[in-house]
Length: 592
Image 1 (cartoon, one colour):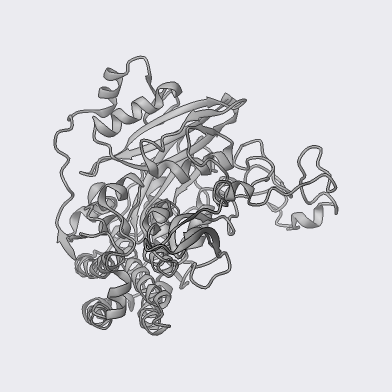
Image 2: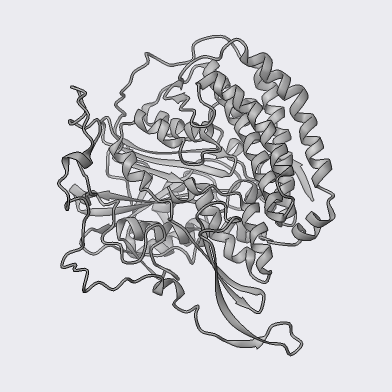
């Protein structure tokens, strides 16, 4: 059952006023203001971090931990971990930070306060080497056990390393390009740990992963005296229903799931390290490669974050174009998500092909505007790359006002009442409301659990505060509710699109002059958008130069997987496929 609500849920009983001032009043000896120019938030003494976090959650009402980011301040000799927490009633973040020396980086884990910190703390350990004491499962998550070093550290250099920042001198300004591989002598193209010898190397493999899972225990699996063994089974990474090279290590008692651990990183290419090598504008096409179904929305999130640092005002026409592209992207994503969910359930290809047909028509619009169907590279800081051709708006109106509403109704007629789908989805993969919040889930996964939270209303960006639309929320938090939320979100996107197409003005589409290079004022900023899969956020640190000092992505596909194990417990192996499909992940965004 899904219902529509106009606004976010109120959060009564929490104190009003500046949360930073309240924190400083409550913890005068543990809280200090950010001491870097134009940086946001407060610094929390590391030994008081769990106590302060509990106060933020329980007394100030910031129940939702959105993002956890590591930063290496090499010249200052410390790592900084940045937390962004939000109230579900809306508003901006409460940003708090903790620091630890680079020589022995240790911080308390906040998984006991916000379980959604689980994967994010593991990522920081993996890429920066910061140990989180009290973490229930601290091991690498994007790289493999035994990997030498922590590659997001500023002093870590990769094979074929040329320079810290682009454009590289080898390619600019003369333009005589030579691949790094050609300039590197054979034998120096890989790095080995100190004292490494092939003869003395013992691969660590999956020992850490299987630790504690491999004990075979007997039990009564069906409660009727049938003796069963507890066994561990791998699903993936080469599996047709894992939506890419993704692996699930499943502990079974008979055929019932008692535990599940996601294993990822097979597509990891250190997107963020490359992003810190790139120029600010050079990262725009790079964001296309995250969730490649939703490249327009990826552009949007990055542009919003950089524009916060730049203080630039986007022209009216460009704002409307951005909203049009974003909501068309939401419809594309949900058609694909629903189609392939049914593919996973056995309705081979028919629903997916129905969805793909509509996607192709929307991609025609993207190609008209940007010149590309998938990797659009269309947004720019302060606007968009080029104006809409005159054929765009009539075709968009035909789709939005006639074809797409009819197709969504047909889609629902064909699928919603299907008895096999109902048997496989109702009551399966339930994520209770409190757990959805605690695990930092976002988007349709969060809203299907009954949480009326949408970034477009909670912290409106662009011109979303001008549009009338409702938030679909579920009541059971199961696979069926996630499906229904996406159906209703497509209808709400059409409602927004009709308003935007009616109201779009003439005028410029770019603030200032176009430039291939920009310098962003020093400071830090967190910008976020309501991506079709959930909150897509970018945490950026600028030193005033042409390249980001820190470029971090809060990837909704990655964080939504934190709850997969809890959703799967008590179900059968066949149900995992449907539960994973209902989360809607893209591995390019998960692994980065």
